[in-house]
Length: 132
Image 1: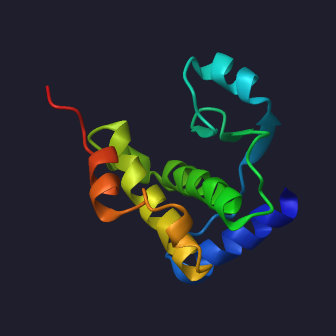
Image 2 (image 1 turned 90 degrees about the vertical axis):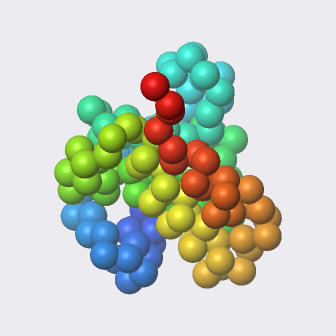
């Protein structure tokens, strides 16, 4: 996992303006334990207070798609440590940059077709604040 973080942080540095000097801790846990901890179904989550990425053991980090999930959570870590997260009107707005960066990574690896749900429309919908 440590080598993957190094590679992904370097990719972020090369392909974006993001700088991550202190990588987050990554905790791999069973999918069931992750569901229980957060009380909903997910494969990965970044905990801002703890500065920890929680990752389901079901994610194969040796594949571009699995690595892109970790990258997505690294973007949330960057948003947190840079203070960018404090500029959002709601937490969902943080998803736009994370999904766009994940999509760019998959495009760079020529495997974006494996995640067609990462399209502009879906990203826009997933990053909207709820109506009052």
